[in-house]
Image 1 (cartoon, protein in one colour):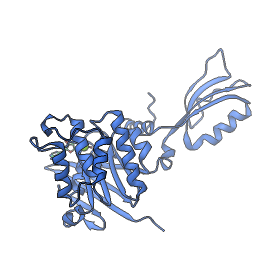
Image 2 (image 1 turned 30 degrees about the vertical axis):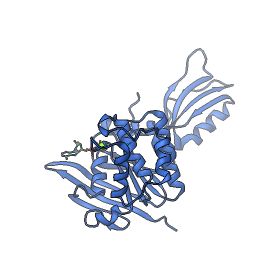
Image 3 (image 1 turned 60 degrees about the vertical axis):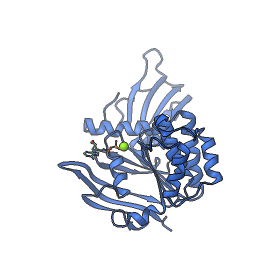
Image 4 (image 1 turned 45 degrees about the vertical axis):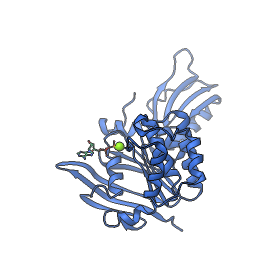
Length: 308
Ligand SMILES: Nc1ncnc2c1ncn2[C@@H]1O[C@H](COP(=O)(O)OP(=O)(O)O)[C@@H](O)[C@H]1O
Ligand SMILES: [Mg+2]
């Protein structure tokens, strides 16, 4: 059975005057998954999310959450949705604790023991006025309210940009706990390691367009694995071989080399190496960062063959 679609965005467009911030954004979030929405600053992540929340009206295309139109049915959608913006605004003269309770009340939720537990986990001092809070503390207030909200879909727009690594870990732990409960999560981020660790599927956005969607495994045809190898027999020069890149071999030790290889062409290269009798082989799998860089270089260079 196909997973239920919680959120569906089709050819979404958004213009600010003449400027097209979103040109063609298409992706789905399925029930029970963490979907990572990644792209650099200015790519259109927040604009997409604000449109999904019914704050902005799309100029074209369509978007639904729980099968309802995000613009026309936003009130009903918000009854089952929790959201944390990247830049959290708080009432300066209320305390963090008061604001958490206010957020919960606005979402028809109650302050529970879970709320207290989250305040402890994030080590927030809820008695201080919000105007004294750092960016990180303001984010914590919004995160605590969101995580203690019982929703079906959680939308986080770069929620950890002001958090230190310990709190980032607490954020990740709570997202994974939601996932275990079968909740759906849309997480925009430019922190690739975070996305890599937590997300089931990824959508990459560049200049208002989704350029790739899928699991990291599905994107393997775009990635390269780094190989360091030592063989008993001397290695031939593989630099001319298609699928092999950055081939390096010193003249003194012709049985040692390092190179990168297109991940879906590993098989062929391994056969060649095996025939030369492998002594040592180290393979470093591609990271999301490599993949991301290739995409962005592809955009700039036009062919994706640029080597750093
Ligand atoms: N209200 C607005 N008016 C005009 N331009 C905007 C507005 N909001 C965003 N933009 C522009 O749209 C583009 C996408 O912005 P944004 O969605 O905030 O990107 P991201 O969240 O990926 O960093 C940027 O070029 C930004 O300057
Ligand atoms: Mg943004």
